[in-house]
Length: 349
Ligand SMILES: Nc1ncnc2c1ncn2[C@@H]1O[C@H](COP(=O)(O)OP(=O)(O)OP(=O)(O)O)[C@@H](O)[C@H]1O
Ligand SMILES: O=C(O)c1ccc[n+]([C@@H]2O[C@H](COP(=O)([O-])O)[C@@H](O)[C@H]2O)c1
Image (cartoon, rainbow, N blue to C red; front, side, top):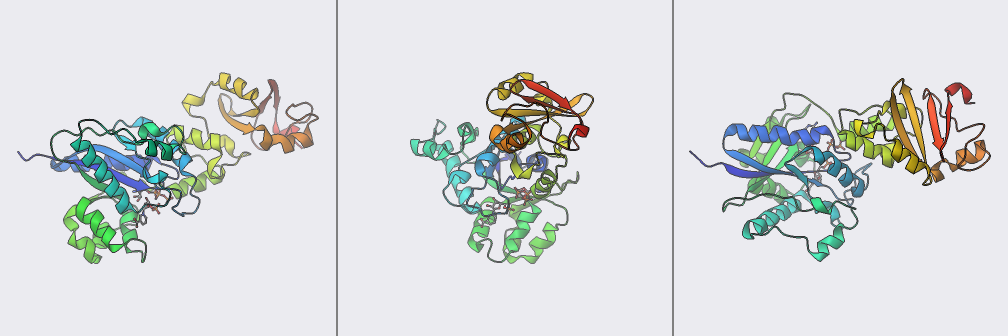
């Protein structure tokens, strides 16, 4: 019986925000590699791109990392590594792979897992509370350093052909030294693409194409568009990620009439204690009721509301008489400093 090669799957991306498909890619890839009988996937690593990557609508890495951290609670084998996004400038994917390789070699050579140096700790301070994930815990058995393969969608593979985007020597290093696991994506034809590229054809045996038969063309771009329009993204993102986006008002999530489409996740329901606490801490908790028994809450810092409140109510932060008008949201119950006012759209002018 031949021994199985140990593999770590590394996926680099914006994760702006992380979607269920980003997570599923790992599951699909692991299944496919295991099916061959030749590989054993020992870990998955997600490396969010740094803020220096000038991509439209990229929210700060602090938020993207927090969303990834929340999403990865649902996996016991995929970890985040924040090394890339804590570098002062954008790092090429080849550089990230080199770093990961060094980490694994270091792990392999030492009996103890590396603890972050003081310098690294300082670098990670900007990304609050994610230090625990900065060095993915990978259990290495035996003498061989696992092979790191770059996991990506077919669109990333096809971006190799965009003039000036990737360095040719980087492509050689990525595909020749590490190898790719490519998940098919709608509209892509990776086999044809490899055929048309000399360099990819040269390293063809290092490219593993996985057809995703449970077709799913989720993309972060589409998610951001839906969020901007106030449309539901439930079951497309992890509930914890939706909660985070809502709490931090990311991606232009509207505060007004569409917000009731973003239903709360089960872990947010019945959180009256938190609401009471917020109402005493300079924040307004607005509870939107869109049907008989389902609620969605929206936390607004007082300074964001003060203009409305100044205009419409006698005292800032208190509600009496007329209240800010939130149109088209059905029954709305509003709590400010423990004053609770219920009203319907008809009461708005
Ligand atoms: N639906 C999908 N099918 C296959 N691969 C995907 C899918 N969505 C994302 N990927 C892959 O995930 C990796 C990370 O991508 P990225 O964070 O840029 O996601 P994205 O959804 O394509 O983002 P955006 O829409 O903002 O460009 C890339 O390799 C990309 O090809
Ligand atoms: O290394 C490169 O030259 C390179 C060129 C283009 C994109 N990438 C990486 O590809 C990943 C996905 O990029 P994007 O633009 O599809 O979100 C992200 O991690 C980028 O750093 C890397």
